[in-house]
Every structure is written in C-alpha cells, then in structure tokens.
Image (cartoon, rainbow, N blue to C red):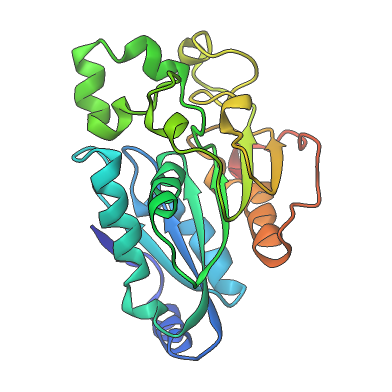
Length: 249
C-alpha cells in the first residue's frame, strides 16, 4: 500500500508537506473503493488541498486481502504517514469499500486525532449485487476476498460491525448507469449500493445526491458537501440534489 499524491503538481506537494509539520494543521486521508486507485480521488484531493488540508491520497490493492487485514494495513498505514505527524486532527473521506475499512479499524481501535469521516456510497448494510453474484467464480476473482465480504446477510462484515462511534456523514447516490446491477437492488440505488444500504446507526448526517457510484467522488455537489461536513459536522442539505451534467462528475 502506498499513500501518495503522484498526480498533484510538485509545488503543491511541497506546500502540503510543509503544512504537515505545523502543529494544529488538519489532515484528510482519502481511501478509494474496490478495484479503483488513488487516481479516482484526485479531483477531491485537489479541492481539499485548496481548503488548506494536509491530504494523503492512499493507493492500495483492494482485491488481495480480506477486510480484516486490509483495514489494518491501509487505515493503520495512513495514520502512520509522516505527513500527518503534526496534524491535530485527521479526517477520512472514503469511497465504497474504503468506508468499511474505516469502520472496521475504528470498531477495534482508537486514535485521539480522529476527526470527522465522510463516506461516499458505502455498503454499510452490504450490497445485493454481492448476494446475487458471489457464487460465480469470475465475480469472486474480480472482487477478491474483501468484495465477497460485502453481502447483505447478517454475517457479512458490514453488518457485524455495529454502530459507528465517530462523527460520520454519508453521501448516497440515486442515479445508476448499470441497469443490470440495479435490477438486483431494492429501492433507489447508485448501481452498486441502495440508498438505504448506505445508512448506519450512529451517523451524524445523510445526504442523497443524484449521482452514480463510479463517479460520485468527482461530482461538484459531492465535493462541496464533503468540505461542508468536514468543517461543520453537517451537510446542511437534506433533499436529493438536481441532476448534474456528465462533465460535472
């Protein structure tokens, strides 16, 4: 696993490394989803950096380990990142599987620096897509051990974790570009996870935005809502947002 900022201009990296050594600065760890990379979070990374946060955009292999081991390696590794050493608070912004890694880690451990967490499209109650396709060998090969643990059954990892104990805001999408997956999912969904399935007991706020699972982290409304929650602990909006043009995602 590597937590890097390879696609951000060098001058910004240098500036953020300087900030990380300033006592009292706030950091943000970005965790991408299953079968994705840190490149998917770059637009969000740049927006957060522009707000003055020390941003650590983690890149990790999501298909090689089960959630239990992946969580320790990824979340634990991010918290140990040198750039965050001077931060008074460390927030997390996650996409999909990344949110479950954070839930698992902090269900078993504490870190006094933990600030707020925003999860984008997290399968907090699992996904029916996993229920339907888990028996297919090709699906198991594509999603790996962690992906197979994201079903809606009571024994799935998300459903065994219980309520969250940190300040959490969840953003769900209700637009799908994968009608096959959506046929497997109950209620409104983003093509991977139902809106209802993103919710978890103990969360501070929940917001539905008309966007898709694969691209929600690039959506302008999502990004502005993430920043609002990190600063205030609330999204400030309750209803589904207007449709975004494709280039707005």
